[in-house]
Length: 588
Image 1 (cartoon, rainbow, N blue to C red):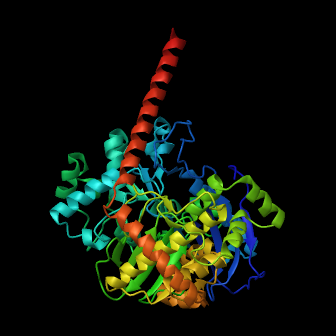
Image 2: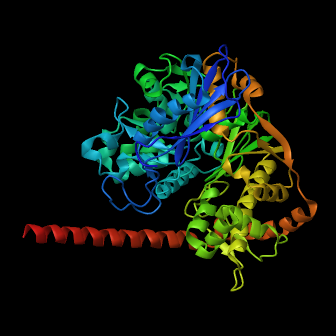
Image 3: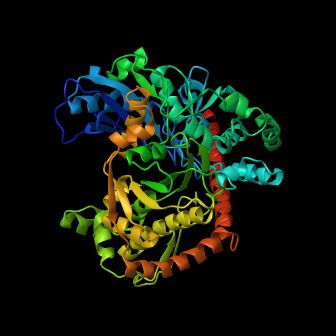
């Protein structure tokens, strides 16, 4: 969507708002867009919504400001796009809902994580300083910025060597997506910017800062992405061993006041009230992560209930009343989802992104034309073609690592594989193998939790991919579990609205608010024994490949990544040399 264009508004079935009702706004910041939803406090009814696609989308090949080529594995965004969501989607959602803005008592937000914004003391992002507009490191590093993998490797190796007490809380490995790896990359690749930066801020907290004028660091991302365990960050000694100039990173750049989930971060500022057309001073909830806010929206906050938020990637969250070390988990945080329970997180770096990549790059034009003729989307058309065959008929098995592996290997140098292709393999068969691969990745995560003593007793799906019934049935068969689904198309936004209601004092805590405002469809999909047995055989093959390529059997994927980086560097050097020669010729 071009800058300045109006957001897309969506009206729910409820068209009139009662004068005595109270409302909250949930704002969900996704990978490509931001969505605002108006929610009734008494029962969670969603009265209207609006969405704005980020004008700059994701910068993963070139820097929008200059056209400068970005290295492999980069993913940047422009923070002004997030403000545009406030200015456009929120007023549009309120107007669409037909409510009086004076009846809104709170605002809640959620964000993809770990998405980092380098700012100066007053919260201004570095890219908004004219002298830094052409510097890639001045921009937001999106969650799927994986170029810090070598820095994550060094952190992991040193932590394991020293026996750092916090490492087991993250399954033995921290991710290149997280705060410290990305921060170390910034220091070592652009030390001038690192020194100019006053705060290294999660986008989840930066947007709340813009709404309230106060910087409050949320307990969720601090624990899961910022290595804050038992009130402490990694020590200066440890960080200094990575790089002497990194020793005070936690103290100088990261540490800040911690806000608990569901608490108020402050009142809506006069400036933000003008942006979004809501009353100044209403409660703004402490920031949160899209996956974690979804749990109460799906009424899934009790121990054993794993929620999978399935979109471009998948995040798996669940609560437990016990603390355990789960290999490859993204973290366990006391109160990380709701107070009084340990919140666990795991995930898959690519799911919907993999399906989109395949469609955008591998599907012949004839399939698009046939989908148009059938009056359906290309994804649905491929799904319909693939679904008619019995399990295993395509003779394929794939690894879902096109964006690396988040859990349980925590290695973003890994890459995708499809085994078994022949000259007879059809487009829809490969598409089905990719769908199945993501289900196998989820089963690997579930089995890892079960083995570690954190049993998964119920599986609940939220996110855009639940709209594909064949995919959901595949997951049920592969997992051998019933699948329940959130009864909302806006799970994260609804979850943020629930937190807003708590922050405004309408409910005593998030669990109580979720019971009244959350929505769940129980056991929508049940496993089919015949398909499940066939998938057991395919999963065994998936596991062999998983171990061979992911656990040291064959390091070819890492070697290929290294070759790719070397080639990209040589191209960049050649481009710089050509540019310099051109400038010299012009001057001559």
